[in-house]
Image (spheres, rainbow, N blue to C red):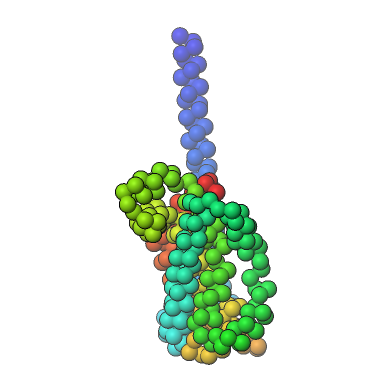
Length: 289
């Protein structure tokens, strides 16, 4: 009888301790979420202020919500043209990165050949190269081949520097897929191209989604490459448009915040649409790689 009571007491104490632990974890995660989201909230609120309010009351709500800030920011920075240019560059870079990365990863993950370790080492070595250290040689190369002030001047470098990560993540994901699936498809008469497009690509969707969002963030927010390779106003991307509000003497913060709020919305939307696939891909890549 006493043993039964002690067991019940111990189990009750264990359940109470587990509840307290879960409660503490939830509180900590909530606090972390608030700290993480506050800068975004501050950005959107600051976009509705005047410059005087931005300096004198940086953490308070605006007295009068200045909706006109967004209209002026859109007109002054030519945000419409910049959005189109950034979208074109980002979509083309992502398409090349995903297609080439998936093809290379499929070969490295599913086939065995003598030079496989060498190619894997070269692709992994590409992840160690500081991207911005290549600006000068790339500028000279682009000038010689006549690619400056074109979309290709951004698309090709973006794709090249994102490919090593894409190949590494997708190859790690594909390695864990049983080879019996391919063998069954080959017996049924499906070729390697059919296996790749009908089976491997759909199965690797979580890994590809991870690469897509990481590449989107890198391409959409890049400033250095666009600044060096693009000088025509008609080809300027979002980061270049945001720089027009700052001069050597002053910065129009209300318009800067309004323009940044417009620029960050596509990133938030893309992340919300693909967040489930991103988490799956990052977890799978970390465990299976």
